[in-house]
Length: 393
Image 1 (cartoon, rainbow, N blue to C red):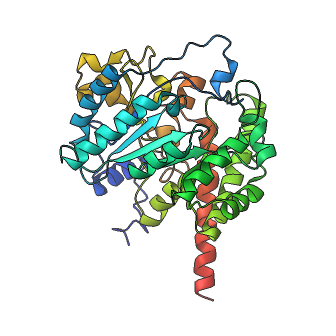
Image 2: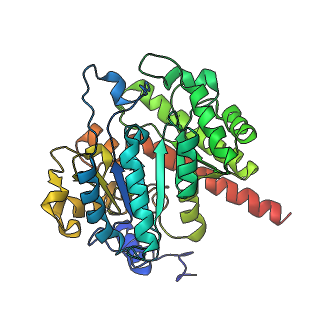
Image 3: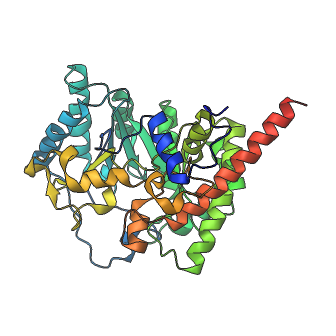
């Protein structure tokens, strides 16, 4: 019982327990191990979602990746992709709206597929994160042919979605998103629906989830917590508490319908497998992001900022770079103020961007995420108790 931590030495403090955890699970924070590779092919977007920073900018000059930069990025990334072991590397096409730079998007996908076929790099999952509005028959056929995984944004039924997700002229985007989903479904492509929790839909998940399952051929869903807000704001605090409760309820619905929900499942895997969830975001030591000019960062939100004055032309070895290395330590398991928290083992630490924006420190707590992690942990304990009780009659 002592070996399996059912009982512990009362003389041990929290730090001793954490150190034991590191040793038992062979956890090391020495250097980043990159497995996820984000390529932002353009910063332009044809939407102006009201919770996105772009909607606040009056004068915005988008940046678009050219062919020469794309070739340089792929050459740079391939060297890191070759080093990935155990897991399948992920190359993510991102924006802005990546389909606004369709030529470069196609070039990247075809080049990656060719290098996989020629066995120059290991099998790599290619993921396109899109608003869906520019998907037509030709694009859908191309994505199908090249086995691209699709994450497509939709916040709910038309009335709910179009309160936030609008075009530059204010027109709702719902009909074009649904058209894209139907085009993909017609080709037996099941996109992951990415739903951002916001004040407009937070208390409507109980109707949104069944509606999505009934109307679209989906088997996975991602519920995105709001990021970038001022956590001292009363409305943001309320959204945090409401989001935490509703995501748990949404997960219960997804479980009922056999839909994989990524947000909660990461915490649940740690809970069930009795292995700590060290990070909640790949940007903490497992991800490299690059923008249209070849600027590098570990998180897309920090590209082209003072924290990351790096470019692929610098030919840096990012495993040895001080800024990339310090992000490996963005985890509650190294944050003593988190040691007495019920969610310590499953939390992962939240969003570094939220931490930095609210506290000017990536290691600080993500106040928005804290509420979610604690609520999820308490629900898991209650849920496990119910399962055991029902099993035992």
